[in-house]
Image 1 (spheres, rainbow, N blue to C red):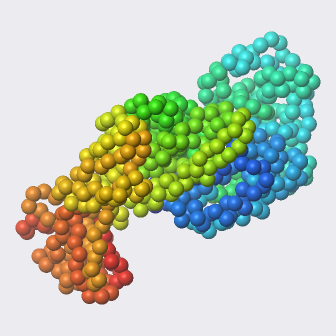
Image 2: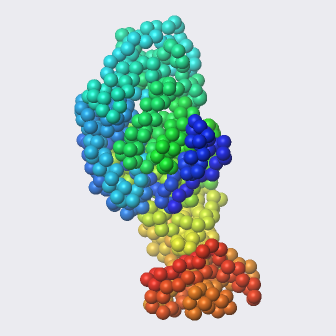
Image 3: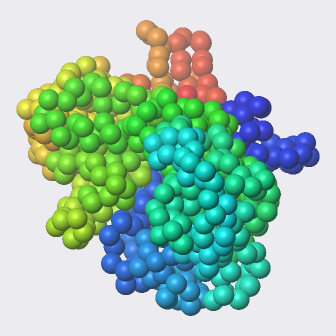
Length: 620
């Protein structure tokens, strides 16, 4: 089921980045002016790598082997690491981009393959992911280039590191690494050669052997704007900074995007370092590719800021063209995990995209930048990770992303000996609960500093319902409304063996251990052979009004409400009842509310029931 955002006409134009009225009309007609994913309902992506994976070229083969199992577990998309050749060749994680057209095909930078494998293995991995019914999001790095083939003589000026708008001293002529000829590729796929005027600056003068930030001089040369205002202007990040206002650069990157989509068949993108890139660029770039391909191309951008206001500003500036990672939510998880049980759990979602703009929030617990030994090191402690994953996987807001190292575990030595424990067992149970039960109305219980809870009431196709309770303190119990009166709820993570029974109004007292979580799923009563369980969800009634099943066969009143079959409100507002019908009966039917002669029919088309099904579901 597609989940598409709603934006204004002005925002649509900005998001599409169209250059003509004809192009805008085409995009509007095809519904491609949104950054929100067209994914499976309750979709979940995985970041399928971490920074310190071994550089043995095996990852693309591993994707092929794991794809079917990951889909079975409940994942619907994989975010794969940069597949293009980087400055460090077969050892580079992929963010020091050298050649965008080399997917592990050419002998460049000391190897043919990338850190993760060869071009053919990459394409085969994408094919296996698609065969398993999942999407693939490619990691795209367009802020800078590294590993140039030769230097060029350029006039530049030094700028202050803490304020890049402040120039230091006189202009200087320096030798800089900005000439990219890609001799190993020999012009295959593109004959575009990068020169100094395609960049705005560098951080190394070869002839001076000096590390400073140098801004280039020349016609049109300045830092790009608008960008993040940290350090005055945060256009410059590292390596040779690409000038994303240069018309030749824009045309080449659009051409590359078309090539990449046609070559790989990926379904969308993860965009690197967007806070350092002209805010107008990606709206135009994505609008061009969405228009050319006719595809939604789900895209999530890395604007890594713990200030939710900065994220809102970027969303506004780009017209909602992309989703964003919810860095403030990660920060809250990190802080809660390190507070020794003293964190106020009522504040866990405060100042986050998950709470303030859930449609465009990609939620996460950790990633390759926050893992130990990285520049943004801020890992969520192991004891809290199951609680954090319950938040992103079992609530209705946001598009959750699971980190490879949290799922598979990781062990490496870089700045120190590091072990990240695998949480696969609990994540798999949460994924199953998300896929099968996390639907319908959500009621929050954020009313206690140590205990946080919510319930999901289910829908016609997922009637069981769900109750979740988290504690960073000593544990306890909480009364919560499940929407299912007289129902039995069982805990699915192995924390409790004794079920919870709800009262006639659907309320139950759910327990949780200290520093832990509990997840409870309701049971749907079994039917006897020859019976069909009729379920009518959202059957909210007034006193004296009841819900019935009426349908095209005599046993259901032959469409006469007077002959309809009364259902039970024991799981109100879900009404249900088992009805004995002829074996293999196929029919159409609807839910109706009756009070005397007054009848309210279920809206929409008739519910269809095939003879092989044991449950018939409808909803008002």
